[in-house]
Length: 580
Image 1 (tube, rainbow, N blue to C red):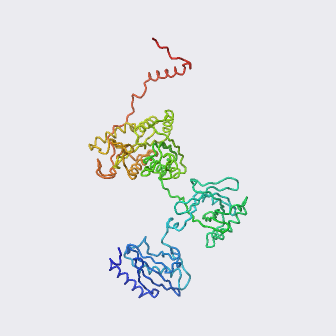
Image 2 (cartoon, helix red, strand yellow):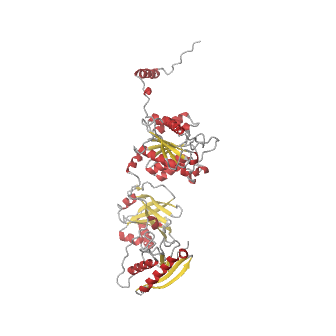
Image 3 (cartoon, rainbow, N blue to C red):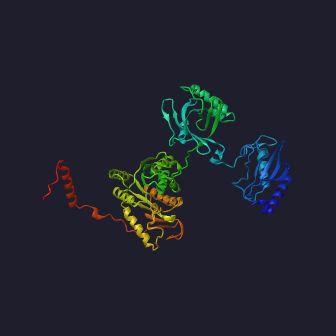
């Protein structure tokens, strides 16, 4: 839509308002209208004392919903500190964040005059214009290709460094997409010890460097307009002081200068050319909590995730983000191309065992996480001894997550959860992505998982709406014709996310879920009237421990005597002879 062709009333109002301003303001002249790439443009001149500013005001395609922009005619000119680089737009009182359609181009021109006349007045001292427009961290870093990552513990360390004593450091440099990122791997302290930042993975390539603390005035010279020369002088001074000296490697070397608060990093690409590149500083830690205080308890929990496919990979990654720091991952499968439509892994794990790929992903999310991987098919053709050992290890975890969609694995895990008295969570995604089920088992509160599964099946039958998708409704298996059941990443993600919430609630001892099994609708159909309906499976008889499982005194006596006799039997005892 071309606004000045469809809204002629607004066009005329704009012209008249600007002409009226020019008639009464002796500082505005040279009005000239034109087109530029389908946009309406006004060239004008603002005069302040003996200085003239040649400017262009460009109306956007979506005016008056968005404001016009003003920039110097000279694409290299810098006329204000409130300008997005040389030749860039001015940051005025009327901006996208506070613009209203009732404002006009005349308001924009008036704001431009107030800015330049305040910063460069005809008489008196220039004045600073307070900025009302704050840039986000991302906006500030847009023009910075190199980024130096500063962690909270690096700030704490820098505050204790003595001035003027250079410290050798090892850096890691990696290139995510369109930027180069540098981070300290370790510092070699004068007493021979090493300092390392916490939670930083080993990415990219290793380089040498120097870190030194300077007085604030010295740091200001390194970050100023002549910073490259000052950085080179500081680097050479530091290299001579260090033992051994750094003259043996002058290329591709980092220099980090700090005053204990601020940082500046230069990268020397070539000593022959004195070629230095400055990196922007990016703080990657802050004091703002991102998780509830209750999640602190998760750092001491270990979760067993059986099945590292689409559901399991999403649950495990999300639990790592939530604070869980110990995992046991069980899966025998490998990642192939077709898995990419749902699995939380990507091409970097292609051809790898899913458990190993998921372990690497967890460590990239939570560097403190300890992850054990078992390439094992629970309920499959595996050595009986290995299976028993694995089930015992699963029983030692604080939570069991079944993401296999395999009835044989579910039965084994049900037995482990009941026997070890450990909570268990499982999810089912229904064929066609129509919905799913999320369930939990709490020891000595809920029925055993196998019983709960039977109750859910009975509940489905009681709804009186036949399931026409397949004989079984579990995602992950096959339908009656043997074809894999279908659900997309969004379907799986929703059900997995509900499973994560239930898992976290169990681990922190919460009571967010009145029922232990919920059916979640994702589409209208079958028994669901609307998407996102939730059906708690209610009316379950309260769990009561089986009194018959408690041995009587006579049973205990007989069993104890039998075991004692076994231990007392000679090792070479032969079985009794068979009678003819």
